[in-house]
Amino acid sequence: MNFRNKFLVPVAALVIFCLLWEFLVWVNDWPNYVMASPSDLGPSFWKFRWLFLEYGWDTLWRTVAGLLLAIAFGVVVGMIMGFSRTMRDALYPLLVGFNAIPKATVVPVIALLLVGQHDLNTVLLAFMISFFPITVSISIGLSTLEPEYRDILASLGASRMTIFRKIALPKTLPEFFGALKVAVTLAFIGTNLMEIVEPHGRGLGHLFDSGKISADYPLMFAVLIALAIMGIGLYYVVVVLEKIFAGWAERDAT
Image (cartoon, rainbow, N blue to C red; front, top):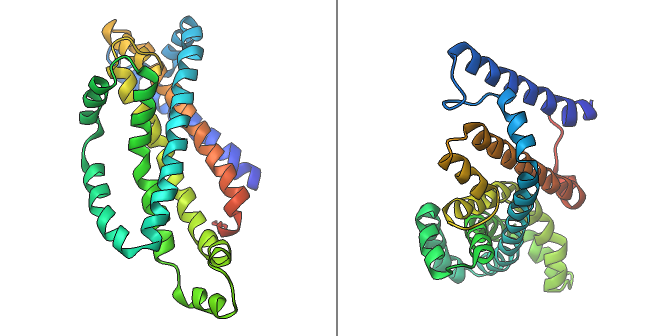
């Protein structure tokens, strides 16, 4: 049952999606410069296989680097906001306001500030776009901690570190991993936004832009599928980590 739910069901859903996609293109008789079908993607993957490997690695490590920075800063800022109501009231409006700014409008600003720094500005945008959900999850998890649990442990002589380790950390982990699953996809979005804009950049975003310029639509769709595969892979890495560190919080569903 567990193997079926975790592996066979997602694979079956993917196969059905590809079949429906192929059927939709076929029944509407769309040429590949309007909508590429799954059968058009294989030749593009093979033709540009070395670029997919090289640029895919560029996109992956930049995304992971930006995500790790978002985790580090998000946890620290989230803890500050979670433990201090004053800091929470001061920082929340700033975070919400910044998150409301479309990140596509930030791309040219960063590109101009860091001209030629392709890796740095790409990592920076991945960090900026995935920082918010991690910070908010940590802040909410700590600020909604039941005070009676904290008071009971304190009355028994527990230190602040013990209270954090026994109560606050387990309470926050489920929210943190839930936000991290969202942040993974956001980090990929940030990475590719910058790669598309950079005129002499690298990465799958740059390969997508090359396909757009040359009107190679199968290549563009192949890049999108490659990004989706990488995103799914990184998502399941987070799922595995969640099961290791917060598996106790999972509830079986029928």
